[in-house]
Length: 431
Image (cartoon, rainbow, N blue to C red; front, side):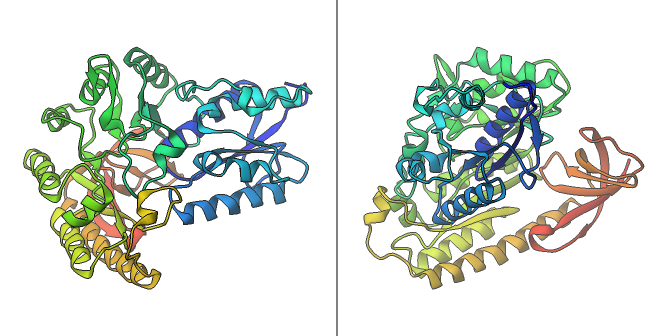
């Protein structure tokens, strides 16, 4: 790198895996002597880590790329992430973008930028290709740090572009994972999030997902572990028992996508509603307060009103405290693109709103059930007189307290609720 300190900004769209990979890049650039600045500030380099899971994701990514180029004229703009894979040739043809780096070379962006400032023209395709080459997160944009155990997916759901842009499933060797965990804890993180594209299908030598989780939980130290997002297949009956471990937090984002077996079949999901119900019953029987959240796609091709009502009923029955609702979005090259009976946008909007209203009711009901109970809150934000963060159950909690340190865990008794909808927050008193 040149002697003048270069300023670099990052912007991340999409999933927790993308967030982790950006955090790892931030750590790399910080150690290399670059000044990390906010995306809204002027920078010599802007890295945009994109998402392409829906048309809306594409539009958001394009808007951010345009904003980065407009606000930093003459600076280097590096575009990476899933959109870089999905629209590589188109993006490479855009003058405002300096480099387009695919997912498997994302971890080598520092080498690319260093070479550029050193006067060397290095083509991104010459960078090392390894989805697990990211270094341990030290300087982070988040309170908790992710541990990447897997990448890619072999499920090929009919609506999904991810196997195309992230590649086939590949698992990180367990010794590397444990080394990453120990280094991350040594950097001061109190909470780890196990992440990947389809982590339930982890497979390295004789180790499966439960084995990795157990090995991480058995690493010495005072820390908490969360699971980012899980498909409701691939793991064994042993999985729910692991939540007996005090380090494993009682929250799971379990992706349902639809409450109709007919729709699930057209989506090529690997389970039916009865199997999903059986998983939830095993968990909730063992841990009554367990927090379950999910993803739902509305307006999938061929979704009838009857099938949608089945989804509404499933959201009601399973009492998800949060539902991430997607309106079905055509992804080129997927089987769903070629299906008949595409649902009009107007109907998708109506169905999405119905799910949102029901999810808001579920959330309020769940939050109310927690009042009077105690949560261990990992503090993310703090002022002189108040603090906020997430409790064991991954619920947002605000409380009063004098000069509470960030990244500390505080015991809080829940006393009430404030806000509405997405901004609903539990309030409590410091014990």
